[in-house]
Length: 150
Length: 150
DNA sequence: ATCTCGTAGGTCAGTAAAAGTCAAAGTCAG
DNA sequence: CTGACTTTGACTTTTACTGACCTACGAGAT
Image (cartoon, rainbow over all chains, first blue to last red; front, side, top):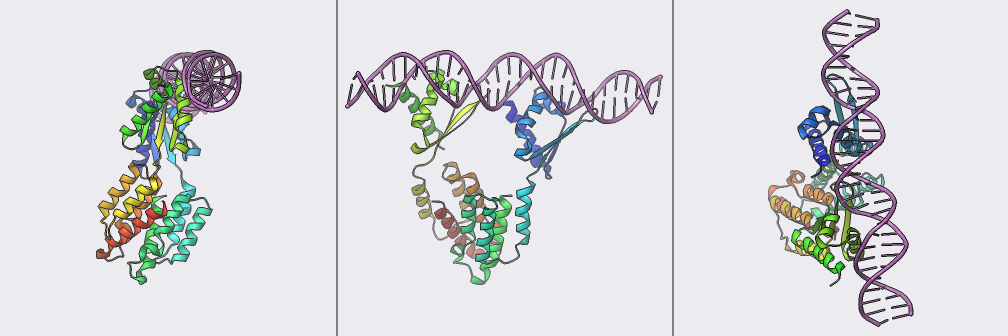
């Protein structure tokens, strides 16, 4: 396995573990740990943690220096999060369909995801559920599905 | 026997052995093994592992590069249909998770689809439903979702 | 306040390791 | 003989890795 992959995996893992999407590393420290030259870290950051890929990288030199990598999937995530918060306890099927179409139209979800979500919130799936309960389940299902693709 | 045939047989055998329809080769390595020039591998891939023939070829250059050949199940639909028919009236959540993992592993659904389906059949979505009814709803939901992606 | 020095990160060019491209030459069935 | 398919190899492009040298920050000394 490539050194670059090992380094980037390590950094991504640190970001995951951080819970707030931020990893702070010492360049020399990490390089020593993984047995590579320090500039290799820069290479990995430049090639796999670009803004285009949803990261911002900041750093400080000198004593106590560091490199901070922040994951910034803000746009999509916050738009979807906003939608999730706007869904109440109950959601009727036609409103659900409209919400999903909008997400697709705004390019926030893929066509495939849209198809699956549409089915999952359709009454086709709820025939065994008491009609009074369906809109409640639908709201839960849509929220859970959207949460999973944030 | 033609060189191309030997190469393509070798690759197909690797795909068979892989059990999940994916073979990853080093171009130069395979060429050396079979005693041909590396570009011959490209020729074989271009002529016999096309999308029309049910394969996806991806690659990466540079140090540690590779070529990945994925067989997309030609018979995806019928494999999924078969699974749908094997699901009874009720389906517990751990069985559901296993079914979905298998679909993903066999390349019959995408990672994104697997994530969504997993959520949609998880108890997270069914907290408002009478526990006795959950496995019934789960069976319906999974069948409907799979039907939608056929 | 300024100087100086140690500690860190940044840059860049060079080297190597793959894979991709393409056109020329070869082979073979019809 | 011809046209379609194969094979080859020279040249290109991309990606990975290294090391020498550069720049910035902080803290203690003057």
